[in-house]
Image (cartoon, rainbow, N blue to C red; front, top):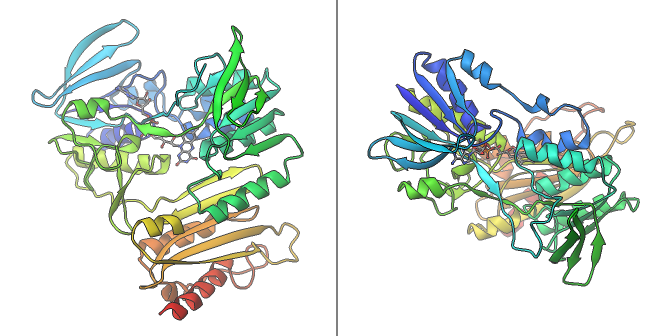
Length: 453
Ligand SMILES: Cc1cc2nc3c(=O)[nH]c(=O)nc-3n(C[C@H](O)[C@H](O)[C@H](O)COP(=O)(O)OP(=O)(O)OC[C@H]3O[C@@H](n4cnc5c(N)ncnc54)[C@H](O)[C@@H]3O)c2cc1C
């Protein structure tokens, strides 16, 4: 069996490794236009921050390790065209600048996503970066170590992670977000708390500007020098990070007649099959099903890409497997603040046609007399008509992450608030108050629902 995998970071690398174990005699080839294979893009902000010196720590498996498993990795080879009728792919060797055709029995597309770059005046100046690949991380870190000031455009996950990285590297940093709130995947009230908590401790080393639109970059031969906004700000800087989102790479799939879903990513079923026989898609180029209400969603996350890569490999190799979908669970950190969520926010629940009700509590994450006690704010969302749990958000300097994971299990189990209240959660002073904040919030939610019934 000839298995071809396009792309080899998270989904592609996982699919290859799994397929190699399932079918050791198969011919498995990874074609990627990248200079590296099988790496943790998620670790790049921490490399820039200086948590470790050598970026090679981020490389999970080398081409040589794949080779030892019988898997051929072709770096700097871009797939140009997929020909499903003849089961061929046109590949372009970037180094030798020549194209050639290869054949496949089964094809897994794992070509990921690319940064969204807005059309802003002088966007092509030197030292204006995006962060996606290993080379990006190396280039950004080199510049960071020679800089004093930085501007980050975009206050989503990567923007806030880089805010931490730059601040820890001693840069005076300005984060600019065009929306009224940073971390807009949270409800507005929670985003406000995030901004307030982050700016409380900024000590003038960094600033977060919201509702601020960039009009142009200016600079010279040496690179960007300043960032101008429509409100008249002119911020001097040595470098700019564009963290304005990502979009799925779907062009070659579309061109081959592979169906694109309503989210703009490749449409797949729960076996990661596309509409074309023997072609699978997984990771950031494919869309997901939100298990709460079986609607389509695009969640470009490493956690999901790995699971989908495994599922695609299982099915491509003839072993049936199902990827049931996602809850959109995510977590990140900026300085000492943890931000985590799962399921639907209140605003999204409304968009999905639910009648949401919510409860928000701010509590200690452990008993108040413990020396390392910290705060967390928890917001739980449920459907006011059925009592069904819909989502949870947590922010704070305390343990805001594991509690969201508990809630994610409840969402998967499709529990109601009343059912959730029966959870027997652990307690000891170093870990939680006597009654966990999750149960406090659920109790308030249950009372609110009773009133609405
Ligand atoms: C800075 C950063 C931090 C992140 N942090 C987190 C985190 O903390 N938690 C989390 O869950 N997720 C995180 N993510 C997201 C996570 O990294 C991605 O979801 C994951 O890398 C997706 O893997 P993938 O294999 O689907 O796609 P990609 O990582 O995009 O890899 C696709 C590969 O395919 C190659 N390719 C594209 N087109 C072609 C073509 N035509 N032919 C051949 N090759 C092609 C690309 O060059 C690339 O190497 C982060 C991402 C970034 C950038």
